[in-house]
Picture 1: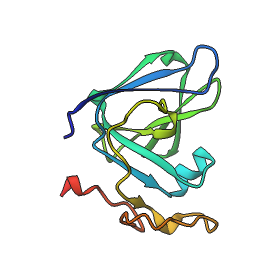
Picture 2: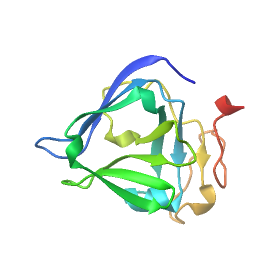
Picture 3: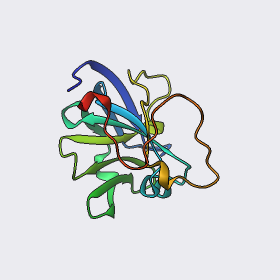
Picture 4: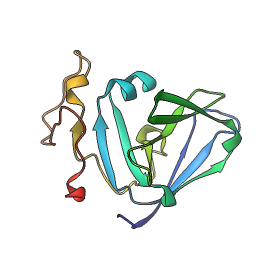
Length: 148
């Protein structure tokens, strides 16, 4: 696994008493996701997800505000019950990891990794054009090269 120590902070959108969390290990992987589950819940054209070992992730403030919404029987999404911000999720297929929505992280903090592929391209919205960025594109799920 990754193990490199970092300190990245994230939070919901509440202006008062936001849910705050931190990442203290470099993500195992980061990817662009175009699945309808991620895009529909975020209201965006894509999701940028950092896959972090659970041991390197911690909610540090206002955990009591966090609510769960299962978008699938195997996808457990956590959002702020006050502002509605979707911050992270747990997926049954990856029991040792939390998937953090990168846009909820402090912009000035260095995550230490960049997206390395596009996944679920067959599900992308028809108005979305994937840029010619040289990253691999996968119609469904594809793990990082680190898993090979």
